[in-house]
Amino acid sequence: MNENIVVVPTYNERHNLPKLCEQILEQPVKFDILVVDDNSPDGTGQVADELARAHEQVHVLHRPEKQGLGRAYVDGFKWALAEGYDYILEMDADHSHNPNQLPDLRAAAESNDLVLGSRYTGGIRVLDWDLTRLLISSFGNWYARSITGLQFTDLTGGFKCYRRQALEAIDLDHIHSVGYAFQIEMTWWANQRKLRIGEVPIIFYGRDHGETKFSKAIVWEAVWTVWKLRLGLIRNSAPAGVRAATR
Image (tube, helix red, strand yellow):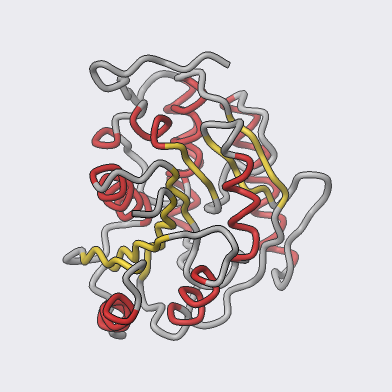
């Protein structure tokens, strides 16, 4: 079995998924793929099953309904841990993340427990976004840093690599966020466990097909989640038997 797996949550991504899987499987570093589909009405789940039949490295986790990005990732992470993978990566299905940068995240995980792919390290590396969306993202990251005290340049990005020990140090059953605040919350708990967290620069592209999952509800969840974390209103205890890492 491969030691690396990429978790890809999907909802109505049938046009994007085949090309994405092909690009991941072509990487010089070998990655398995777990597609976590939320019963997409456009048939993405069936496309994923076809890819799994064609490639032994592709796996599919079907969920009964759309329950949010955070829930999809939690279920995918649990599956990957149960199957024994040592490095669990995450990325979007809409081609906003470049599979050619997966090896960079994986390499950085040799010296870090969590690696954040950053759109803002050393400048802005975002293509095909209008100014309004870019300002919302930039302000959101500044806001999250200001409230939480986490000094990473991209707290809301979804291109990451976890060592299994990092995920095992977080109680995945008690992750509260379901939207993009999930990314902030996971990094918060990794930092609370004193895990080694690093960033690598990535280029972020606008999605190829379909509609964005971005919404006002997702924004408001993030606005309040950072305060809940800072004020201790959200709890997450390290699972029994897990020893916090030392930086």
